[in-house]
Length: 395
Image (tube, rainbow, N blue to C red):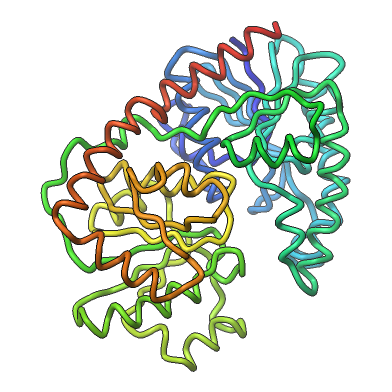
């Protein structure tokens, strides 16, 4: 098939398919989209990818490769003039900018597949009367809006307006990335019918065994470590309890953060950063190497429509802990079959789960069950096939 992908995308994830060596690293944290695109290419499909970038040089460029074109569209002046929060005002203009490029490149494509429900989906919706358009819902905007305060509330209020516009398009086929997302969608839009196709894990990431099982090396990964939804502060409290018992324990935090932010300063003031290593954002290959050194991943997020990092950690045979009432997280962890679940708002509950997951019987069963589950349910080969089956129904 000839598939148009509209969404945040990192060209470096498919570098082996691209001509030339100068491949930009942009749009960190878009693993699900990257993995799906890579698998489509492996299966012989043709892709045109439309993505935004604010990285200099901020000019329109096209990167070509074997069966793929990546159209990198400049996001313009908004980030540099107004900062990240005011950047959202430009999303209306950005969707128009994306749609102009798609309009020139639409001929010959069989479908458009947008990701998330904001500027990319808005751009793709302009063509829903001309070509089958699909949109994978990868977060739940109403929940995001409900927990935000201050400037973040303004930011998400504007995103919510775009979300409502996208969801009102009757020609778009929406895809839920989890049972939780499906339930949220059906509650808000009961007339919409949509399939559930979960996020993929690159089948080449899945380890059958781990040469060395480390202990007391805890990791947590979030695009924004300071976000209230990611709940990293509660994990830090739990880790301080854990470190009192296991003196050699270290906590490794991967994701964006700012040492000048009041949230971070408060962590330091309370001495919650002792024994903690902050990495910032990491390229995907570096993340795999880091995960291979870890014994346990704690995902303290209060809500996820999926939680792709759980798949990635389990694929590297890292034991996982997540919230029992955190959106799709308990489903991904098999309600305790593939990873432990607990009251993620309670530091003591997280601490006890971190202790329990070390027990040989517990860890062995979890690793064995998780590996089989990944191969049979979430492997990129299987998930890409489900998308192709869906697309072909609308050709």
